[in-house]
Image (cartoon, rainbow, N blue to C red):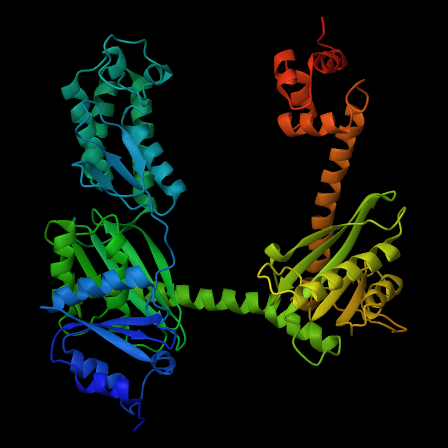
Length: 618
């Protein structure tokens, strides 16, 4: 058995028989894992025994240097404390939900005399009625449109009732609002309509359809055929909304269905939302490193984190599986958070078990698709970089690739762009521009020589300094030059002239996408469908794009200065201050005399000269 050191062995020996939480720490004192236990002695000691552990736990144990414990009176206290500690410390080896988005809900504030539908991201204990969550803003907007097609609910933000009646807006004219602002309806009438809205949002379409059917028949019987046709269209919209939802053979309660799929490395939790007996949507939560852990433990950890910040806790939670005793603990905790009854169940047969199987299939499908996307992404990024390195004869994997391109207009405002790809993906914070200083005219060869000279000279200086602001000290494994053999030769020579050994380099001649290596007689031609050539093209195109954007800005700025040079009495200092104050030529042209006089360095004659130049000196 491994000896953990005197300090740790003493702590292990003195562990109490008590519920509580334990905090595993690494040698730097950072908390790497938080757990809870019914019996701290048994649970914590299990980590330090020579028994088989899952890969994640083995990795965690290898980093443990110390641990702390916090005693609790009950298992429920330990559950709540664990949740708060994970939220506070975000330990590396705990389940951490990185998806911090808050799904939209629909809110009906019944304290208002004339409520309207509001979109919100969090549920407050304010007595309002909330419906959702809806998966995405588009979904919630579609629901609002469906509601407004059926019910003439107001959409304005006016404070009602007004002190004096107002003229109704166009929504009154087209039958999409009862116009309470204009006194066209009473508060009880509006409240009755709102009750129908809440039944509708709760999934009770039958009563809405029955009422609309009756109104349509009455309108048709009274020969008001235009009104009957409008009601018919509303009935069609309601049925269309019903068909877009998945009908479930359950009661009218609200439920969350939770299941997990695992592949030995990662896990995927599927959460399906059932409201009013209908499935309104679902979401997946990827959990890295949880692919070999006990599914019940994974789901228990997920539920405590998810429901700690969830806006709406449903009446029923159906879960694939949980550790013994955990459903009862979660029930008590969720009841406290919700303020009303909550049941947590792990059904093993019947209709509810069928729903869990549906969630399981969704979880497995989401994990399979995620793995497929990851495989494609790896093929296009790290895989492509690895293959490119082999094709170029490199001895090691090119983790950092830098691409260079020169942009100018007939030699004017020449600029070099440096883009960086790390593991086959753009690292945009590492991008840099170089204003070409020593080259006259459109000379890409000399411009590349200057650029690479300055880039590596920066790196040498940074390595000699001890500051933290190092932008150039990390050198590339591979350099891409936009051009053929000549451009490549100049770029390589720049590094050699600094007394340094150049990294692996190649040029990309754009005409036929030819890859040129230093000193090669013939280029390398790659299949255009291969990920490695597509990676090369992405780097080249990104360098070209980045350079062009900066060159365009410089050209526009130079154009502004040249046009301002036309104004008598406005020299370089005043031009700079005018541009700094107004930001554009248009704003300078539109400025009045007083605003121009306030600019630093300006006086009345200079301001009048600008006005005459802009043609507004009448």
